[in-house]
Length: 257
Image 1 (cartoon, rainbow, N blue to C red):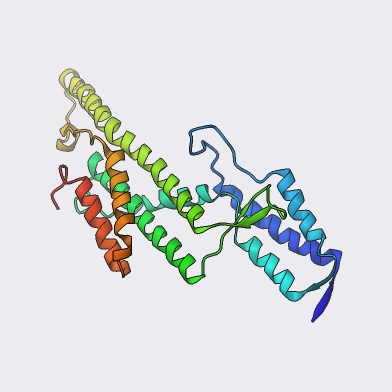
Image 2 (image 1 turned 45 degrees about the vertical axis):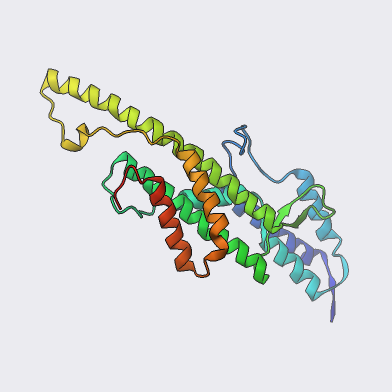
């Protein structure tokens, strides 16, 4: 069956897409791109015009399937996939997985590293299996495409995940070096106050922690080891067990598991 598309129908579909763009604004990575350059990612006017024109071209005879296909594509359109994965990975840091969650700097970093690799492993599994069984379909804006958008490949999807993991690993490695140093400086200052003003320090306040060196390299090695061995993990439970083993290996000199 064919239907005669009118301006109201075209506008309705366009408004649905515009709302999708608006909803994704909160996921825009406003601080830096993956190379560290200041950037605010958004869809360009040309891209919006191109998409609007593609909607206008619907005027005339179209099948119901044509409308459904366009609405389906727009519902799967990612304005900024990097920001989406980054936001999800950061949200995963609120979880606590450590067996020695004592509030120390190293324990906090352990949790952060664990949850980053845990998120990476689960998302990697989701991406690979989704493309293998045909259930994963993501579209991205592309000014070089005739319609202004195109379907993402599995390789591009995994590459976006890798870049976000690497960015988070850089941040965590920096924290692992600087936070213990900052704590030592704080302990020294508090000791001076204790001597002068009789300030009492708790035991936790006086415990110094050593920086965790080469954390970025260790996280890259664990990520690569996961990817190499992924095909051997037939179940989700085994994926989780492997992640636990890899993270414990990273912190073997700092934690007793």
